[in-house]
Amino acid sequence: MMSKFWMVGLSLAGFFFAPRGALAFAALAAFSADGAEVCLIAEDGKSARIGRTPTAAREVPLPTESSGEILAVAASSANGWLLLTEDGIWRRRSGDGAFQAWLKPASSAEKWTDFAVDPVTENILLTVTVREEGESSSYSGFRWYVRKLDRVLPVFSRRVGAIDGLAFGPDGELFFGYQGDLWSGALESANEDGTLTRGLLIATRVAPLADLETDIGTPSGTGVRAVAVTATHVFVHQYRLGGSGWGWIARLPRPKAGSARPSAVEAGPASTWRQASKLLQSARVLGPQGSLAYLAAARDGRVMFRLGEGNHFFLQRRVNRPPEKWE
Image (cartoon, rainbow, N blue to C red):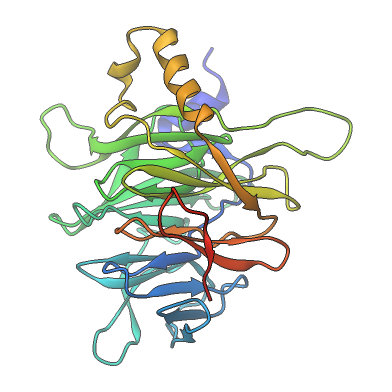
């Protein structure tokens, strides 16, 4: 007999059961599309600052019509600064700088929790949770805004549910954390004829970064919670999976383009092991970060993050040089 879990997963076409209250580290920082500015969201989600550097950033007017806190920020060449709240996506007007409502969930039962913009297509991938009326648990899944259709589509994901962190590389390849490990992939049409009525997430695990354990005490394992991608490297915030407390900023080389496609692993597990081993041997820890990292990458390859007990901002301009304080 099919279990209740799988009955729920199939009936919701790509949604996965998740305990209510399960949280992801959303994107609280972003570079503008041209790399000239950064936007930082306050930890309480009640304010946003924009400027050329973190210390030069100034508070900007927020959507007054929104009833929820700011969950994430992203930048688009076509639409400028974008803010995500539980009410949907807001885009900033070029004239007065105010944010106006743009995209909204299809129903009040659906909450958008994080998002990322593909710099090549300007499409947007969103993570969502859905809690039906009267239910005590929610379902995690994805939505896909396709710019050429100007529509938000459902996304079918067969075996990946709630994820932590998502980011596109400058070439449009998708990276995210799932169960503590690093994955990469792409979005395509789920229809055999190629028509776009729903998306399909195609991805594989490219680096086993989760550090897992079991004990009588509280969880101490860590895994990928935030991601930033350049043309050559992936930066991750490796953070405690069971709560707050400790973590690190690390970087590793990007896997070979296209290696995330399932067809690439048909050669057998040895091929997968060799690739993962190569990536892990080249991985580097940049420093400790036990709170929100404000990790973000510009399209020119610069990467911003916070390090240390003082939560100072650092900027990595080139991977062959140490990160520098950026204030």
